[in-house]
Structures are given as structure tokens and as C-alpha cells.
Image 1 (cartoon, one colour):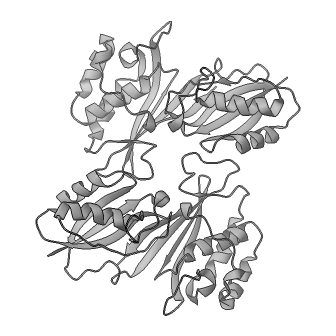
Image 2: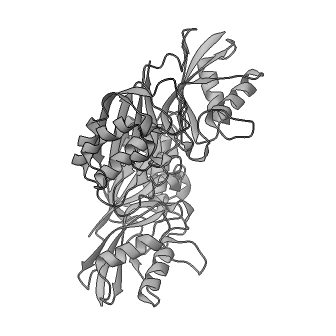
Image 3: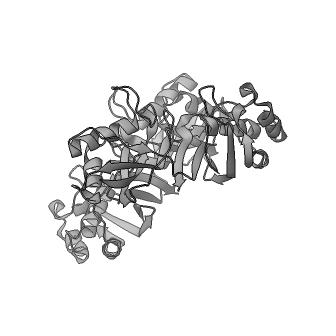
Length: 245
Length: 245
């Protein structure tokens, strides 16, 4: 069997997230497996690197799949792009080492969050960003963001659905940039709990609006209380940007 | 009466263009007039600078409207943005000279056309660009584009619906840039005939695909024959970018 790595881009707006659920549930993994199974003539499973939530987008989700060598990389890519819906696309198909595993080999992940921060809507990005009308205080958000860097127990910034052996994750970087009306938050870490990025961003937004003090972040982290954080930011603004192996 | 200038941004995807048609027709001018009429309590007409086609977008359409001085610029902007659909937004409302006329005072217009030129779809821009899978020869497109610059009779690049006194228009600049998988064509001129930008872009695309010689452009212009040009590019990729007065 050959092992192929897929680089996948999607608008997650109308999907229940990456992970295949019961039959009939609209998921990105499910869609791709369905088309791949048609190509190879038998039920085929793919392994995704990141289980993005319902509504979350990806610029470069990574998955791997084992297939017999009957089809070239280009044939697999073309077949998938022809039969997948327009909101999922396969950027690359690459033959990789047989032991490459998209989930186990993931070293770190980068998520990007886009906030549209003007007092009018952005017609082109309304499904791909969160609209915050009131001007955000970026300096305060940057101060707050720095408190997330390093190794912390992120229980407060997770959702009750997170049942992990450990709630400790390490954040390597968190950058906030203004870009033509957008505020973009890019966060890189060794892993993220369920809803963690959205709760971090929601809290940063409340800092930017003056509703939470930047200096309160360490206290919230230490509290491990989920009701201490700010809002959960919309899934529409969140993109899985990059995975490093 | 006060004269206000509106700067308007829209996703034209589900509209029959800018210009108000019969009642019940979905147009951008019609939508804005409807909300403004509700604000001031009587039938109100606005004058747009550019009659964008069905499906065409705008980053900065300009319109003017005369209203009594009962509402501030900020009140007008807020009311419009609250009641307009999400795909139309008002970036600015500015009090201008009483003689300012959005159509008559227009000096030149800039249109931007976005082509997504990769062999996979762009899920985020599929409604805001034209997808050309085969790699375009940008150098040849640039050579072809230069032939449009200057004053020409653009009959060949218009649609039969164009019934203007003169078919002569002047193109000041035409720039083609590659930008992260997109090919962007920006054209500035003193005016454009019906469908003219889309026929120019369609012809440039065919040059990029090797179906039309770059050097054929002057011949096509001189022919004044509408069947000599390339395809008409999709409305989804076209944006009214800027109007100068």
C-alpha cells in the first residue's frame, strides 16, 4: 500500500466539523472518504491531523490515507477535486513514508483568527470573519496575549466536552496584527483543547473592548474555572492555518 | 436640502446589478432607496456613479442623495447599516457641496478583476473570483493589455445593449499582477461600455491560455466586430474599485 498525504482547504461554514460522525452527518472527513471510496472501489478511511469544529475553516488541513498504487498523485487530486463540493478543495497529494501518520506525527499547529473591526459589515468576508463594530484596543490585546505564551493548564479555556489526559498545552507564539480593517490573531502551539482558540480569542476581544483587564489572564488561567473567560468567538473567523510535523 | 455622498460596498452576487428596475426587482440602488425612504418618511432617490451589472461587486461605489437636514451623517450611516442586508454596507456618509452629482462629476473609474489561477478551487473566493485552472501566461497577457491603453473605439468589446453616442473610451492604465494564486487585472479609464471590462478580461484570459495572440488586440479593436473578442469573463470576479471625481 502507498501512503499519501493530502493538503486540504475548506470553507467549514456548512459542515459539522472535520470528524466523521454517524452516516448522513455532513462532515469534511466524511465527504472526502466518500469520494475516495468511489475512486478506489472500497470503503476507505483517512486520518486527519486536526479535528476542526463545526463551522471552522482550514487553509491547510493535513490527512493521510493508504491506497494501493493504482492511481498517481495527480489522478487522486483531480478525481477528488472533480467530485468534492466547491467548498472543499485538495491543494496537494504527495506520496509519503509508509509510517507517516497525520495525527500522531503532528508537532505543532497554527490557527488564524480574523476579526472584522469596522463599524460596517464586510460583504465579502461576512462568512469568514467575526464582526466587532467597536474599535478594539490592540495594545491591550497584545499585552493580554503574551500571558498565554508558555506551558499552562488551559482548563478555563476549554469546553466541558474536552476529556483529555492532561489539560496542559504549550503556546509558542501569539501575534496580533491590524490589516486593512481586520484584526488577525495567529496562535501557534503544540496542541489545542476543544474550543480553546475560540475562548482565547473571545477573551482577547473582551480585553480589547475594555471588559476584561489584560492582567487578568494569569488569574483566569490559574482559576481553571470555565466561567471566568470571555465569550467564545464565532467559528466563522477561525482557520486552521498550518500544521508542522 | 443637504447633499450627502455615500460610499457603498457590496457583494453583487444575488442582485440584478446597481440600477433600480421595476418594483420587486432585486437591485442595490433599490435596496438602499427603500431603507432611506423609511428613514426620512418619503420616497427618496439616490444617484449612483456607476451602473454595475448583475453579479458585479463594489469596494467603493459612490452615490449622492439630497435629504433635509434632520439626520446627521452618522445617523444616516447607522440606520442604513442596521436595515440593509449583510451583503450591502455603507462605509461612509459625507456632507458634500449641493452641486455634487455622483454620475455627472465622475472623472474616471477603476475596476479590479480577480482570477483564481490554480488547479484546485478556492473555497473562500469561489463567489468572488473566476476560476481558471490552466496556468495563464502572464507575460503575454501584459503585452496584450498594453494595446488597450489610450483612446479607442471599444465597439468590439461592448455588448449590443450599449447604445451610447460614442463608443470611444480612454483607458489610462491596465495592470496585471500575480498575488498568492490570483491574477489581478486592474483597469482605469474615463468610462466603460456595457460588459466592456468583462470582455476585455475574457480576451486577456484567452491570450493567457494561448488561444488569441497578444498582437491580435489592435486588429480586434479596429474590426469593431463583437464576435472577434474572447469570452466574457464571469461577473463574480469583477469589482468596481474606485471612482475619481
